Image (cartoon, rainbow, N blue to C red; front, side, top):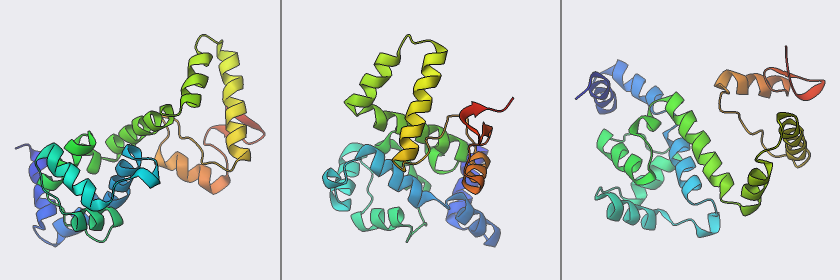
Length: 191
C-alpha cells in the first residue's frame, strides 16, 4: 500500500479529529463529482436510470455492492462516510481513476474530457468540429468568437479552457470577464 493510499484510508476511517476534519475537506465535493459522472454517462435526464437500477448496474459491472439508498445519499451529499473500497467500485464503474475523487487536478482533467465526450455526442457539434479542420488559425479564432458570442446571447455557461484554474473561474465570476481577456475585445488576450 502506498503512503498516499494509507493516508487516505486513515482519513476516511476517522482516525482522530484531525483526520475527521481532513476527510471532510478531502471529500467535500464527492456529491458534485458523483452527480457529474452520472450526468455525463446519462445526459438525458428522462433516460437516466434510477438509483436502484444504477446500483444493480454497478454490481453487475464491477462485482462491488453499493445500495441504491446509499448511492442516492452519496450523490445528494447526505452521506460522506464512503470507504476506499466503495470509491474504487464507483471509479471502476464510471471509468475514472480513483484519484478523481481526491485530487482536484485529476478531477478537472477528467471533467474536461467528459465535457468534450458529452459535447461530441451531438452530431451537429461533431459536424462543426470536423468542418473546422484545416482552417487557418485566424478563421478558427473567428469561429470561436462567433460561438462564444452565441453562447453569451443564449445565456449559456462559459466553456472553460483546459488550462483554466479555479482562481480564473472565481476572477471571471467576480468581474464578468475571462482572466486574461480584454473586456473591450471578447476573445482577445492581454499582451
